[in-house]
Length: 65
Image (cartoon, rainbow, N blue to C red; front, side, top):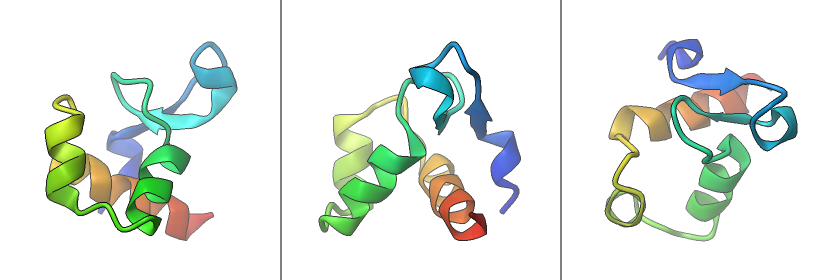
């Protein structure tokens, strides 16, 4: 998974936190929800702009740090 295609860092968006491209959903937020036990289907239902590949990119980004 090449997370760089889906995760962006822009100092003008969320103070430079890594976010899912085209959203204000931070990698930290998505990973935290998963850690709390949210299933992928619930994330996708609650955040319609999110795609399954975005969730995998967040995990890949977190693993690379």
